[in-house]
Image 1 (cartoon, rainbow, N blue to C red):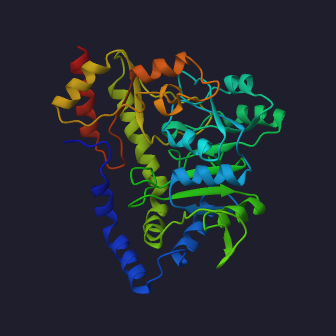
Image 2: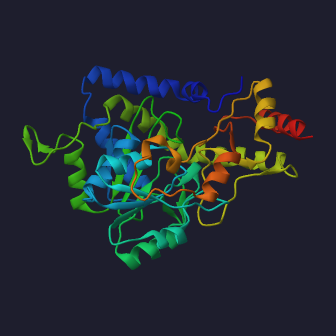
Length: 365
C-alpha cells in the first residue's frame, strides 16, 4: 500500500535525535510551558521572520485565539473561503462571529480577492484567507482590499509552513498567522499542536494570556481564557524537525514536478502555480472529470488517494442556519466535484511516482 503520507519513514530518519530529545524531557519532568516550548517559539519566530511566535494546543485553537485577540465577537463578520477544512469557519463561530463565504479562484482554489472586496459590509471585521494545499493566497491583492477598508488579515497557514511571497513567509506579513502542527503537516508533531504569529507586542501578550486561562501571573486571571498550551514533548519533536523543513519542502516540490511531468497530456488539470508565491505542496490535488475511474484504478493498485474537500462549507449541515449563507458558489462546487489528491511526502521515490502516474494513464486510456 502506498500511503498519502508516510510518517513512519520520517520518524526512522530522525529517530536517534527524536528519541534523545524525548528522553531529555522525561528526565527533566517539565511538561507544560517548559524550556523546549520557549526555545521552539524563539526558533519559529526567527525562521518565519516575526517578532512573536506563540504556540498553542492545535491549529484550530490558533485560529480561535487569533480571532479572540483581534477583538472579533458576536455580530461581526469575517470573510473566508468555503473550500477548506471546517476548522477555519468553526473558529469564527467560536467567537460568536459570522463566517461570510465567498467563491474561490478556479486555478489555485484559494479565495478570490475580488469576491472578498464585493462582500465587505459595515459589519466586516476581518479577512481570513487560507493558503490551501501549500499554495499562498493572493496576499498582495488581499492587502490592498484590507487596507482600503481598514481591516486586519488573519492568515490560515495550517497547510503552508515554509511557503513565502517575495521572501516573506506566510503568516509573517499581516495581523496574525495561524499554523497547525498536526502530524501530517509539512512540519508535524506527534500529536496536535498549533502556533499564532504576530509582530504586535500587545497582541502577543494577549495571546499568551488567552492560551493560559487568561493568566500572565500564576493564579491571577485578567480575563476568561482557554487551556491551549503546546506540551513540552511535542515542542521537543518540532525542534528536531524544524531544521529540516526547507529540505522537506524542496522534496515536496520535487514530487510535484515529477507528477506534473508524468501526467502531462492527460485529461487532468495539475496544480497551478500562479507566480505569487512559493508553493510547498502540503497536498498534490488535481482536477478531473474522470475522478471515479482514477479512484477505482488507484484503489485496485493499492495507492491511497483522498478528496479534499467533498462538501464545501457553505453546504455543510453545521452552517445550515448561517445568516446570509449563499445558495451557490459555482467555482467552489465545481472544484469539490472534480478534485482528487494523490500521495505526497518528502520520501516518496521517483519510481513510485511514475507508477502512480501509469495507473492513472491506464485508467484514462
